[in-house]
Length: 137
Image: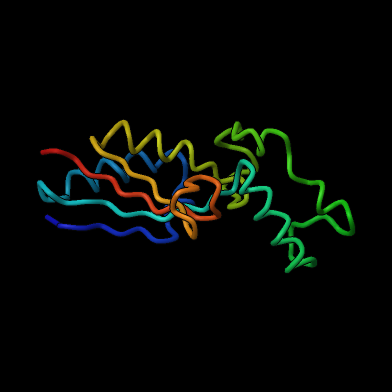
C-alpha cells in the first residue's frame, strides 16, 4: 500500500482503453488517506490552441507538422471545443483530451482537485494541469 502515487507526464501516454484500469489499480493500492497526483497537458480548448501555435513557432520543422503557413491552421474546431474523440489519430499526444481523464478520475475517486500551471486560478486555461485524486476510505 502506498501513501502517494505520482504520474508526472504519464497519463497522456496511457492508451485510452487501459487508463480506467490504471486508475482503478492505483486506487486499490493507495492507503486510506493516500492520493494520486498527476500532471496533464492541456492540448484542447483555447489553451491547447495557444500551445499548438507556440510549438509550431518554436519547432516549425518537426515531424508530423504541415509545411509552411498551413501548419498554423491545422488546429481543428473539435479540438478547440474539447470534443476531440478518444481515438483521433491513434495515440498521438497532440490530440490528448484531458476532459476524459478528469471524468474517469471522478468516476473512481471521491475528491478530484484540479490546479492549473503557471496561474493556478485560471485552471484549464493553463498549458498544464496538476490533478489530485483521493478517496474517503
